[in-house]
Figure 1 (cartoon, rainbow, N blue to C red):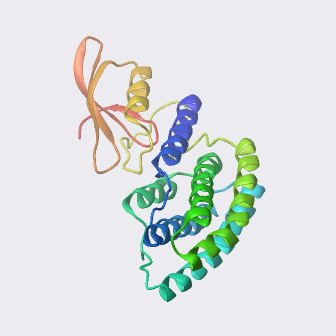
Figure 2: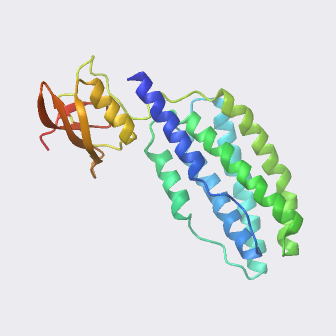
Figure 3: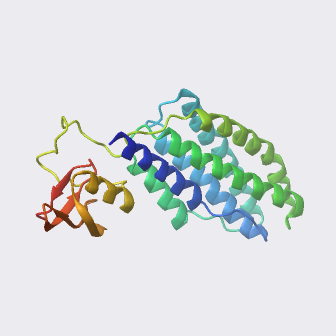
Length: 247
């Protein structure tokens, strides 16, 4: 199960890293939109993980993200207002999805957060560098140029911290069951197992021919499998309990 949880952690980290869109801006409004969403996400994601981080360096980094990006966001909003440009009030769907993943993950979330921040700052540096060089609005070009050194500092900090971030071996809030399933299983709850990981866990429980796996609205993976020569419904909950599925 430890290996399963480690794979779950890496899966979450990878999905977070690759869910972030490639940052590039062609117009002043495009730059404001992408910079604002990126900045809001930095603040909100760092607030979400503050109590879920184990490494002190990452805790300090998260606090710095809240402070630095909070200030940059306020400055961007002020400039955008002067330039009659619209600042988005909320995150886009992609960033909201990433934020939800951090909210539902159990502590510690050091590795997923560090990997996500590394990717996010690579994108931010690329966005601000390009606009500082070729942007179409003088005030925003100046803002991008002035903010860029801070973003690069953040990027360097997280690159170092990411290599030391402890992997989360319990991204699902598992309980101690002394080697047996929770008698109340399947237990509803936020389930971070991927379909492949769910299938593997069910197979390790002695089932074969696992098929038709789907996660229901309670976070329980349900499907069919064979055991002792008989086909049966089967379920896997967020704690890793595998049981014959009685719905």
